[in-house]
Picture (tube, rainbow, N blue to C red):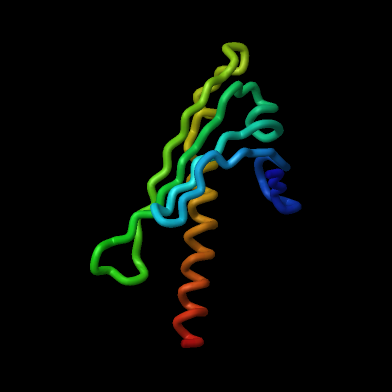
Length: 109
């Protein structure tokens, strides 16, 4: 899947990723970046996982857990590149969307 960021968005303009796991029942997504994005900055591997965990007894609340696995070429090694900030940004976009959807669904029921 090829993803593009919006015009004026800070960061990387595009990347291709392969979803290796999309499990709606467990609410898990695993993906691996194939080209563009961080691969252009010297990464040889970039995988991430996002998991949404329902909070028992708390309607409309959840915990989002994320993890990354990466390898960098030694010449490109930079601790800042190995940050979880891009994953956190994606998780925030997903959370905002879910909250908006929850609000829309609740008000139209």
